Length: 318
Ligand SMILES: [Zn+2]
Ligand SMILES: [Zn+2]
Image (cartoon, rainbow, N blue to C red; front, top):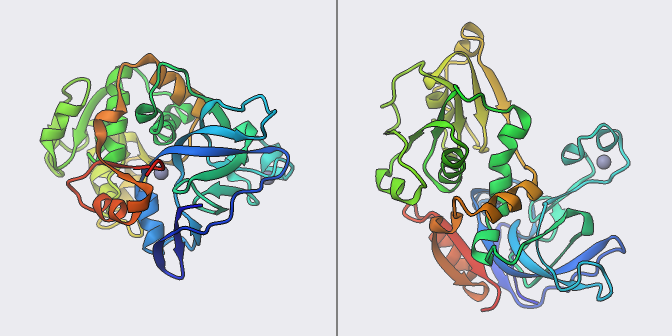
């Protein structure tokens, strides 16, 4: 089968990948659409030490086993595959299982291929009313919802989303639907048109300092942490949603002096993400700026690195 393989420091289109042959508790999913995210771009630069098929944002159809309860269902899937038996798993932290594999990121072939294998327990059915073009956003959407799963925001909290790329716009869209008192910090004011509302918009450095209760760094850039820190009131909360190799220019003493809480935040609840999409109050497909067939996957990767693009999709039909 076809897939985008990262091997020996190089990304290429492979046409002779082995078909998945999963253990009994896993199913084979035919991938319909997949999304390229910043993590994929980082892996393709060799930053994460992963070799294999990339991709972890997808919607697909369950192909095997043929007699399984999910056969023929359209699904999205959680990307973390924990062992289920270790201390971390028993303590209710399966996403932090040290023996876990992660789809297209750690020890498991990813979704930029015609088929993948995942544990049946990871899959969530997609309702008929949610098209593939929305469902493919379930994974990053779950990551946005994770923030409030960790610590619900209070109605009076002023929230700054730092970054107006893929994840920042998704967070802003969710926040507007949920009624956050939101401001967006970014470089593309024209992108406000994509959101279900018009939050105040500031360029980096433009919003008043010490004026937010919560700042979410979705910037994916080294300066995002410092900007988020600058925006926070004393005892504010800084939520880190993106990994970057360096965090530049931040005065960490401010975390002590202003008693800032820094919270790392990763993968979230897929079932809640699908429920959010089914409500239809914000359709993330507005963030899709390009769509390529899988056979043009390398072009999709170059496109996704262009800052003018937001979400780039891969279609396995081509
Ligand atoms: Zn991702
Ligand atoms: Zn475990």
